[in-house]
Image (tube, rainbow, N blue to C red):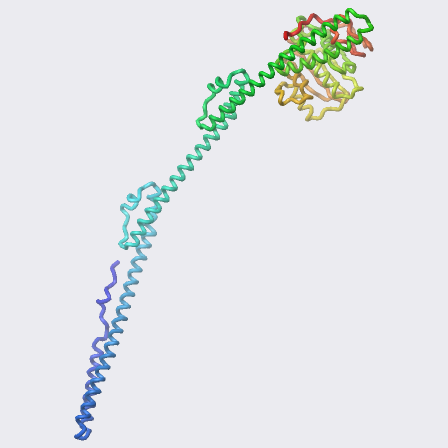
Length: 492
């Protein structure tokens, strides 16, 4: 687009008209002066001619002044019009170049800059505006877009890095919770030291997770050492109490042999109290990783197992046994089965009215020996039955999570898991709760042996051959002549 013409190139139209008017005016003035001079008297003609000449000169001067003013005004108007036209041309020129810059040049430059080009490379090959302000605008725009693009890329890189670190941290935490810490805790519970465990644990890449892992493992190792030391000390102390209780039972049996009827009842009560103490110490010893106080070297018939179990609880007089089986329990499992049944019978007696009986039934089945314990108390709710089932399953034996009323059931779970015994709960036909214990065949030393007919003997006591702790409760169905084999106490 060409620039508009300069103001000096334009001519003012009608330039000859003022000269024609001036000539006409002068001619009229001369003609008028000549006519006036001719008509004037002779003496005044020079004065008239002078006046006419002066008037003509004044008129010419005024006319020239007016003419000059008009020409100047016309010239100024022409110059103003030319300048306005030039400004309109410049405005149209800048508008066209600005539109081209906004519609094509700037978007292309911005696209190159967003693709990673430098400012010089983005401007290379682009049409540069001739107008200086537009060139400045183009360069300023390229610089600002390049700076903003760099900041955006930097922020995006920082965001990606932060997301990567957060993802790695989350994966590290998940790995700690799902594999690292459970495996490390299992090794620590197995007796490994903190250093050995840390050496076998993959170190997280994040230093904070690595420090946290080391701290948690060392603290858990410390707590395990303290717990193991406490269990060892408790087990040792309980083993001494167990040995003392077994020795007291032996002394009481010897006293029952020597003394007469006048002190036998007192000795029997002491024997029974000592048996209850033995049950409590065995319970704690088993929960702390120890073992029972006694071990049997020969099989024991099921009736004697029941007598020994009933003789260890406080409410033995409320228990009614119904055993018509001559099956014997192998010696290695006899004490465990006796303790398991004692805990279940004691639990049934404790959670039933003190005037109601607890009935124990023994049946031989193909799957093994079934012992059913039924009470007449309040029937357990579904939630309570689920808790009891979980307790006897042996899943949780941590002393920190066991309630005081659930310690006996936890021992039942330990023994059931050790010997493969099945323990389940069901509602009792007597209105309370029934517990069904299935003793598997590998625990039975004798199958389906014929037993003497049982008879209810109110107020009877156990024969002298039976341990004093297994004294027959009043009204219990017993068979005469049943005796325990020799027992050995567990070492202190």
